Amino acid sequence: MTTAQYPVIFFYIPQTSADILELSLLDENDNEIYQKSLKPVLTGGIASINFRDLPGLKPLQVGKSYHWYLSIVCNVQDRSADIFVDSWVQRINPDPALQSELKQVSLESRAALYAVNGIWYDSLTALFETRKSNPNNSALVNEWADLLDSVGNW
Image (cartoon, rainbow, N blue to C red; front, side):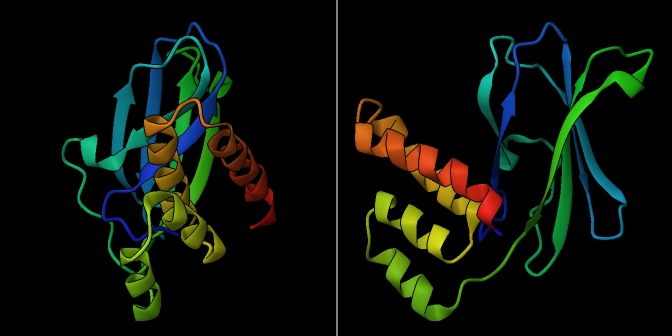
């Protein structure tokens, strides 16, 4: 879940020599509503895409679920060799109590509040932003690893 009109998605990409990544976004009925070719990070690692940076993408609607796919296009002539990751995202309006609490805490604490409430995309984004401003903070590095490990539990 996310509260954002334009969430940030995070994914792992292996080291690759591929020239193209392809992002596809589908609605609840599997209708493609957006597709964009992107340049891959050749060194590999955790990468992100901010939906706000995708030209022409309309904001996600509250209460709707979307299915996104990110493919590494290994061979443009034979797409069966593509490597891909996919997930669902649903935009929600948090309840008023949570909204009030989120306004009163730090970005790092927001990450924990989002996580406790199952709002994965916002939790990861808040923790990522906190880590970016404190890259050498070992506690944040551990929180990041714990949050990534917890995805299998949701």
